Length: 503
Image (tube, rainbow, N blue to C red):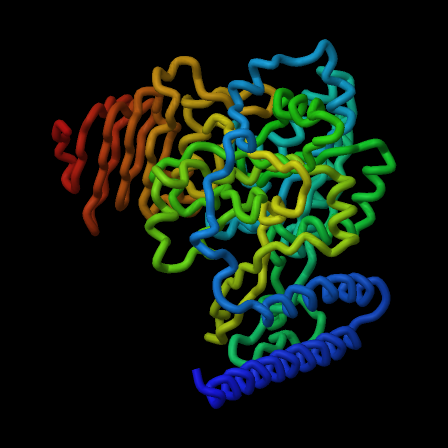
């Protein structure tokens, strides 16, 4: 390599550093301007939010290339991924009350129901017998508190999108035996992709300004929980661990065996973080997985994988488990790591196009990515039943059906189903919105013996329909298929003119 090459490389590095500093200085000036548009409490909250944003933006500007080197990735050692069956076999002590009294349940409640055609927080969509996600969560925790005579509080991490509506709804639980707290996720400014400056012109949230802001992913839980003062309050009340999960994961209930396992680790190897993982199926190939990297457990997301290795990442043979986002985390450790500023979660750059056609980016982090910062972190390989997310109307059909029974807010697979796996259900675009979905079923079909269901086009179901084996129903454009009341479809293909053929 010539001296000239060296000089040009050094010059390029210097130029890039200057450019980074320029972007950072410009961003800080814009944020200061935004702060002058507010007063009092709003200004104070935004100040705290902006400190977190500045840190994230600084790290974003520093990033050079992929955050992982593929040849340094290893399978996690077996002693760091504990099988749930072994944990369950250890049994429970005579009293679990002491452990439960040290626990707090946290639900991630920042999402809206827009992808399912609903207004307001997703947590208020009815999913079973008129019960919403939030109702089921409250029933579960109240049942725990009554059964074991304990005080497990519920904490909701809201976003600015869901906070106001959620607080109104919470009034209905006043007389339930569960203390409910809320705190708000940070509010970060969306960044113009070209100028790398905020889109927002003031701190307003309404009208034209609504899409200038975003909640920065669930990795923000650590900073916003700390900033809210609730973290210190719970530590002072003797709480030690939080159980965190997505509010739309109906399988994420408090598991006494995992809690006991967490509480009985040796004093010198006290576990600060458990991530529940479960075996991958073809439907989960994009899910984040646990790896060993630099002698630490680490979460590897598909966004971090170099393009040349994406197929390898999706392989069910090499990466056999994925993150359910059910996490058990030490409160004292969150406090320590936040104060030391040592979380260092990988940045997810999420590109968006606003309604006016403006290209923006939002910088996000994932809660599970912090696992590498915690001491003695473990994975627990749990049954698939602990991962039951409701993201689409196809998922909703499953949880509303007789495949599951409901007891004290918890859904469990019906004993009448012969196979432990859930059927594969794919409903077409006519079923996307919850309202449309509900009008297409006079009653939810019997699905106990169903393996696979595909429905496409304008299709409705009468009362007491039974679906078994593989059922495919396709109404061609302009046609409509009404499945008559009481129909039993077993291994059938139903096409445009309602001919019923053996599958």
